[in-house]
Image (cartoon, rainbow, N blue to C red; front, side, top):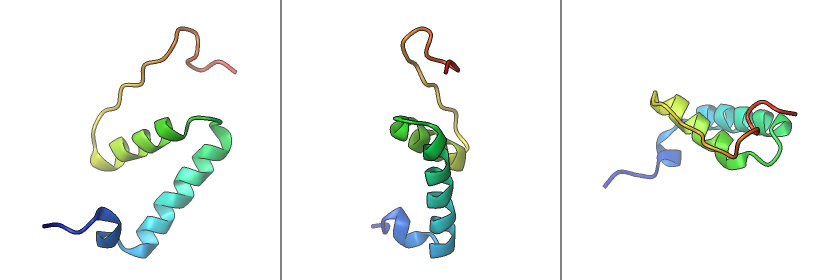
Length: 60
């Protein structure tokens, strides 16, 4: 059986991914799940569709 992903990644790569996540979360308040899913999709080379209530996309 395969080891968990965190054990397979070099610690330097893991640190860079965590730093990127933390940097994104400083600007995107209360979007932890969305940020994590977006990073996962980007790393996997897949698409991500985020659906939310009307009027919430790009508004400040």
